[in-house]
Amino acid sequence: MDQQNDPKVVLSQPAYQEPKARSLGLIIAIIATFLITGGAVFVWQQAANNAKQKQNEIVINQLQQQLTDLQNKIKNSENDTLVTREVTFKLVGSDIYQRPTSTYDIYLKNTKDNQKEYFTRIDQVSNQYVGGGDSMGIFNNGYLYIIRSFGGELTVAGRETYELWKYGLDKQGVKVFSADDKGWLSFRVSKKGNNIAVMADQLYFIDNKGNVKKSFQRTDIDSRYQKVDSPIGISLFNWLNESEIWLTGKKDFSTLAIYKISTDSWKITNYDLSKFDISRDAAINMSADKIASDNAPLKGGIDPQENISLILYDLNTNQSKEIAKTKGKGFAPAWINQNILEYNNPNGDGKLTYTIE
Image: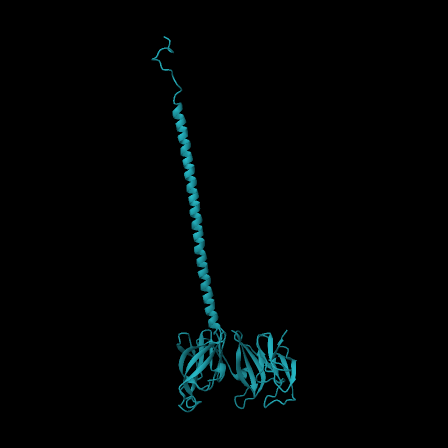
């Protein structure tokens, strides 16, 4: 039989051609979907990571700014604490001339802006020291140091015991030194408050809690000192730094000596100035080891025709140099920093300056 003409005969076709094409298309579609989805996920993850990184950067910057602000606040607080403040006293009542002690309101004046603020009220303040400058009260590194006295009779000064007290910002006071029967006292506090020099019957070095670290008799400092009819009086000047203090030796109106004491080695250096004519109000430069002074009369007035010279003394070389000269007036020298000396214009009004080498 002719198969081609037999209607019951179905001609064979290639097997599964159409399903293979569909499967391949499906696979391609799945791969494409996977790639598209994966790419989308990758892009999303990158975007999320970038957003997270930016957020982290914002947080880090905020934390850094907060840290900087805190550091500045601490620094400003420390600087504000270290700012020099002048201590002033306002008498409570009116019995300053009738008692050896009185109650005072204490004010602190900021030397940067001249603003004065009330600190606290303190009783038993010695009237013998009021108006005595640094010997009366010092505000240093957040603490007020002040001399009080106890045990004196109501109308008799000189029979009381003088004490050095320290008051913190909490206004609570604590005694750090008592002169007992040692008579008068004066003191100087190092800038950071780690060392305190107290001059009483002898020179004491104490820490900020009042523990005595070292003491010197005045004759240990200068053999010319004698307790009775003293030819030279030894006084505290100031701290150069935490470990070196300067003292002066004076007689009447003349400065005869400068002393340095190191608290590291307890070495005493004595500069004998007796051959020079240095006035009581000489300007001392501790950083440069120099003293400026004029040779105006130590007592009495100045003759209008008298020759007056401004002299610069070098402690290390023991040499002197004339800076300026005039007639009939003093120079009133003062160091405005460690290198520049200011003094009265010898030829007119106002001030001139001299810079040391």
